[in-house]
Length: 442
Image 1: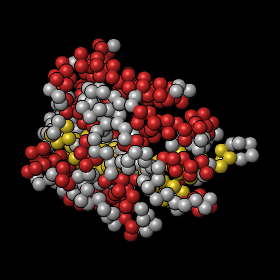
Image 2 (image 1 turned 30 degrees about the vertical axis):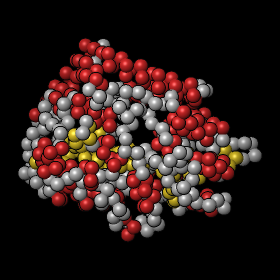
Image 3 (image 1 turned 60 degrees about the horizontal axis):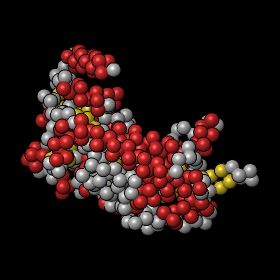
Image 4 (image 1 turned 60 degrees about the vertical axis):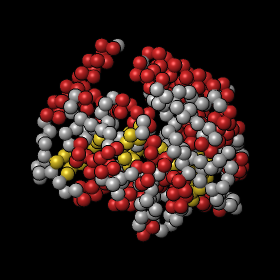
């Protein structure tokens, strides 16, 4: 299997080298091309076009089909990587830094007057810094909140949530807004949420996925178990949200499978948990007034942050020019565009204050909710340098799937932590670099 993998990597490198050789150093109009590996979000085109207008000597080519970081690493080492690429979590940032392809831009940003600690949301810094050095600039920040259908609330004479609510109150509201017909079939859910929502709930329960030093998974702790039990009770005890069986049944009827956003948009639930980026879809065709409230809490009002940061390929010959793109991400024009397009909240705190969006969308007066959520997002990365993020996710997701089929929540959470911690222990034995890092207390 290792031989096959090596051959695959070698083949990929050769293919990308051949492809890169054919690429010119300049475009036909004399501009320098910058390749940017990012997602296929339709807003990316307008964002890069704005950059090109502000930097007429540069041309950004989007590459959404080459987003796998394994490919980026291989291509970069082979000398054919993109100039810039996205990372979506601290674990991914640690991976590309340790692979030697992320450019340390700490001093370069300081020379340009940009201060990550001062200018960006505290929650976004985990997507930018590693071991006290800066390797990326946040492109956006997302924090989940509760979307609600004001029409359903009005028809049920239910007061709108004000954001100070607890999970106990949330469960009561979700139960009241769940509607069943004479045969007991659910015709309207109180909320669209699944067991995976537990991760967004952890900070509000005073819980963490990983210890601060990244050496231990904490999902076996009482606070984390309470978070998972709460969402489990919403789904499986209250039946205020679709179970896996409900979701499968809806899929067979042609009504599921397209995700919570369009299903919430269709009026199938009173509430749903998601980020501001949902507006990219919700603005198109939603026929009821929307509301947003901060996520409920248990122990403290704190939230989980996620988003995108952009890293420069250290081996790119155009890395200095790519730095202009990262500075663009930190500036007012880009942040206002992100704000206007609803692609999360701009990573730059000083400019993420509303932009000119209300000129086009005057009914969306809930911007303070998103700003408050960003300000109260937990700044501590929920990742570990001692375990690959994909492996961590695989172990935890496997236990969540077992909960869906009847495994007790407490047992599954303890087994998840046990599996993660066992893999970390093996990595510390088998990898001298990680062992040295742990011994150094990093």
